[in-house]
Structures are given as C-alpha cells and as structure tokens.
Length: 339
Image 1 (cartoon, rainbow, N blue to C red):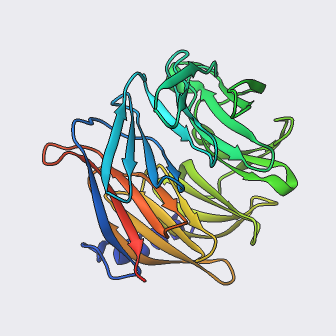
Image 2 (image 1 turned 90 degrees about the horizontal axis):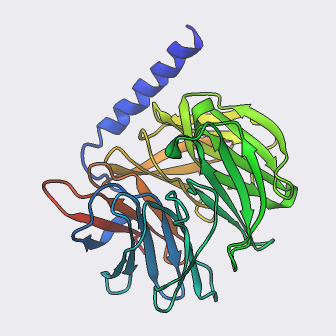
Image 3 (image 1 turned 90 degrees about the vertical axis):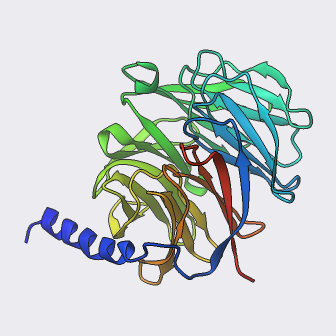
C-alpha cells in the first residue's frame, strides 16, 4: 500500500471514530459561559487575554472591530470601531498599551488599555497579520504582505511592542505566511509558509533564514505550537486536517492524527499535556501521551465556521468564537475543566 493510501486509511479510521461523536462527548471540559456579540458580522481572526483584568479581546476581522469582553460577568464591554481588517491583538501584563495588527494600509494601531482609545497608528508593513511575543527579549514578531494584499512576497518584521517601532524587516518569497512559534533558547523562529506546505526556520535575532522544512503530510499548514520539554513542534495541515508532532530540531515527523479541517488556532497546555483544536463546528481536545502519541479525548460542539480559539491557562479554560449565521448572532463560548 502506498503512502497516500496509508494516510487516507488512517484518516478514515480515526475520522470514523470522530464522526461517532455526533454530539458533545463526555470529558474533562464543559460549557460554562456564552457571551453574545450582537451586531457582529463575518469571520474572526485571533484572540488575546488579559488575566489580571479577566478581559478577552477578539479581532472581528470582517466586522472591522475589536470586541472586548469581561469573563467574570460574561458580558461584552465594548466594540471598538475604526479598524479596516484587524487580525491579531497584543495585551501584556502591566502595560497600558494594546497593539492591534490590521491588514489595511497604515491601520495597525496602539490603543490605551484603560480607555480603549486609539493612541496612534503603527507603521507596520502592509497586510500586517500574525504576531508572536518574545517575552525574554521584549520584542514582537509580525507577518505581513502576500496574497492578502495582492503582493507577490511576504514580510517578516521585529518590532518594539512598547512603541511600535520597527526594528528589523526581511522579505520572504512566499504568498501566505501563517502563525509562528518560537524556541527562544536556541534562537529559532518557526514560520508557517502555507502556500508552500512548508515551515521556514529563521534566526530570531537576525531573521536570517536557516532552513525550510516541507510538512510531512497534508497541505496549507497554519496553527503551530512549540513544546520546550519534548523539543516538539505541533502543527496542523488545514487540508485535509492533520495534527502532526514534529521533531523541533530536524523537522522529522514523530506522529500524527486527523483533526478538524481549516482551524485557525491551536491551544497547548504544557501542564496537562493537552492540545485544543477548534474547527468544523467543534472543539476537539487531544492528550499528548508518552513516546510521541496523540489521543483524542473530547469533542465539543460549537457552531458553524467556529475556528478561532484561545487557551486560558490561569483558569484552565478554552474560548471559541462562533460567527453569526441566519439562525443566531455571533457569540463566544467558554469551556472550562471540571474541578
């Protein structure tokens, strides 16, 4: 049996197990709150979370707003307008600035956290999209350009998160950069190059490209997470939906399991050794086992096109954004681990 046949057989077998979960399956997580977002139309991009204020921020990219929610009361606090197409949000402890990347021309901005008022625009590259904060170096990595803004190449930048000043910029010959992961100890930045089914490995100081790893299975790799303990990269191919564990030194495949197609995020909890994948109308939870094994442990129904999520480690919960449909308004679902 050839490689593709083996892959399809494996997907069919495990997908058969998943399809048996036609409804929410028993497990450690359950729905505890639903926060309605009336008036919000279209898709979402990424979340951010302020643990000190118990605030959840959501980039409503198609709606052109930043949605701000209070998790304690389960209510929306504000819908901040004035954006073109917001994608990612940076919130930091003890900082009064919130950075919002926006793919519109000169539309990325710094907001004052206490008032949610715009302080100033940030001059990032056109098409600013994904972000990743390096806590040890107080710097922010940003992807931009590419097919989102009709450019033949993409851009990778390092900026100062306090001021928004661009510190370094490099051109990446690719059409579609997706989320990143950082191995700060070894100065390696992993960037998903979705249109090339590859992961670009960059020096996190210089942004020099040191390697390119074709993903072993599937196409259109997007969500990614780095595990320092096992020196693993967890990455998802969106087409047809494959969660892979790769060796973070060589890029070699360790193991894989089928997962929902086209997820926008991948949550990783290093304490419980669990992964969270929102997509295909459900949140799927996986347990990372010994000897590089991945086991699906729960399937939680969410809603049509719900593919954006975030893990909240301080309360051991996971939030999923559900876009509006003809039958229901947009909302955010909060799933929490049972005590």
